[in-house]
Length: 380
Ligand code: NAD
Image (cartoon, rainbow, N blue to C red; front, side):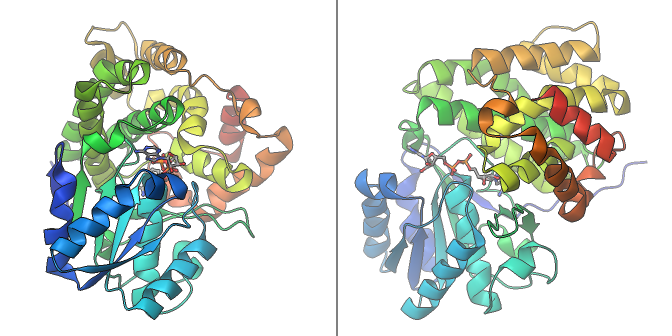
């Protein structure tokens, strides 16, 4: 008997040129916006200026916060929340990849909850309030323009948890693939692999529903058709559009079905070693798939079939298809080449179980500490 719930309340503005809708949407939710982004590129490229202009035309004032790092940090978000409060901002706009959007979400919570954000991310307190959020995604990607999640690192504790709450769904997610033409090749590959990892983990998650399955399958098909193409040629507008759509489908899939063991371990690794999220996922995914195949063999077989458009002989053949893709997009970078040391394994394993065990529970096969050690070793 089918029994499930879906809740993904985000207005999506999808398509080339959609950036210009930001002013009118912001006007519906506030009078002064904080634009949150990652560092100099967005300012120097004129993108921040364009957003400021669209807001101004709609009668919305704005301030800019440029201090979100890739792998954004709780102290940065707290600084951003103080700035938003002191300047009277009542809406937060994330402009960038997952790092900018996740920081915007954390700032929105920090302002509305009125205190430092870390206890909310590490699960000591429940998030019940946030300023309205608009997400403008410039990578494809983390799906963060659709999801209610925000992943934040605390460098003092080496922890990188994801928090999620209904109030953190963006009111509007703007996906304008024209903004993605400038994404460097390596970032295109890493973020594109993140899309596939979301789709694989949501599709095989214990929380999967018929809706999340549809989104995940479409995302996998699009990645199979377009990820190599966009990595080869970042100016291929059709491929950028297709990957932006795949990213958006992936965002829906994980909003419903969440992610599982591979993301848990990749985030714990990022917390300890400050790795690039998509690169860690690419290193870990083949071994993580092998661990989990026996829990949902038909779905694992289907993953490779959706990627290639061909029938496969076994679920294990899907692991080969995914490994081939990882190689072709230049993401075959073992953890040892990403700054991870074997002596970090214990801390990564401990973090996976200490603050992200709920994600491990969604894996189709139970996960032990020794399983994670084996996956880390195989990905090393
Ligand atoms: P990112 O946001 O860290 O961006 C990577 C780099 O690319 C940055 O230096 C950024 O300035 C640059 N960049 C982004 N867009 C650009 C553009 N259009 N042109 C030129 N440069 C551009 O990368 P990401 O992979 O999008 O986000 C990673 C973060 O998102 C990680 O912390 C990860 O854990 C998190 N994440 C969040 C979710 C979620 O649901 N909230 C899901 C998956 C991952």
